[in-house]
Image (cartoon, rainbow, N blue to C red; front, side, top):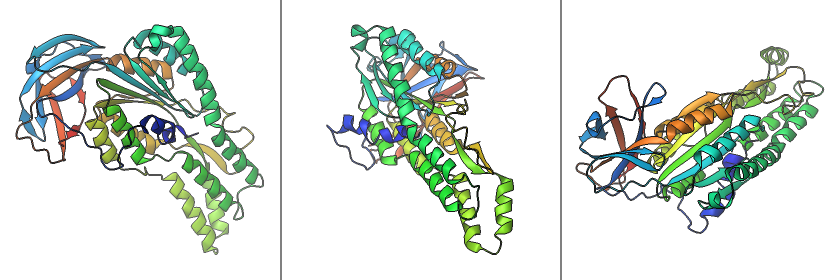
Length: 395
């Protein structure tokens, strides 16, 4: 089920192998004369496109800065420019479609079709990460293949990869079903714990790989968009009634009580990587990550309809991942949405992401000390919401 986050370690690293990267914090050389801040301004869900340079205030580590130039970009077209002409916006687009899903949904096909028919255009590059493989679609692909053909090929890969990628998850659930056919008691508790651990192993996120991914995209000239489709996750849990019964009949067996308490560690999961560190590196790389949380519950056949041993239920267990990637998206100036409809959510987010402003400034008293500088952009007009990357490393 949760193999695609590990794909960054395997197939995506094959892309990076030509230029090995340190596992330490990547160095980001920032030109003190060219600090670029992409941002989007909304009133409700509507993008506001009539702002001027004087409508913004920009702060670097709390110190107000002079905004030297403002550009309004629509897709890859510079629609408006104010201030200094010394800056040269990079408007080439690099897309990443990241499918962290364990069941193929027809709405995913609609999202893919919309992308190729309405969004992808000559000059754009695309990386697609499925639960099994990573695909690269070059900027010249739209010259050789029609949008319909590109969409059809990707949809076929997506269907196959999701099915194969979720096979390990299905196998673990079937093994769990088999081991608990006789019910849950002190003899089957260790087996239940083993299967939960296997499910946990499928969803581990490697921090260094996330940082390498940020470094890889940072090297791309232009605007970088990552759309992460993440499907709601459910895992088997013992019902409160069953837990109470197990605890009651085993009060004089501390080893069994300890095993029962250990199960709660799987139900109170915490992210294993440093969220703040990852947030800073993705903000520094000027990547906008848009997080689409798919709330559609997996169909019964995925969860094994014959399972349901007495005392077990399937409960949602996505809060830790949802919270982590929501924070990362917000730190990059990206958008976050939850929906059962993958296509509608994607269309809404990508339409909002395609239009943006670029602000440029020269930081006061700049020191290349490697520290993380926090950015804050304010809009002087009321009732407007502005989103932008959280900052950059002053290297």
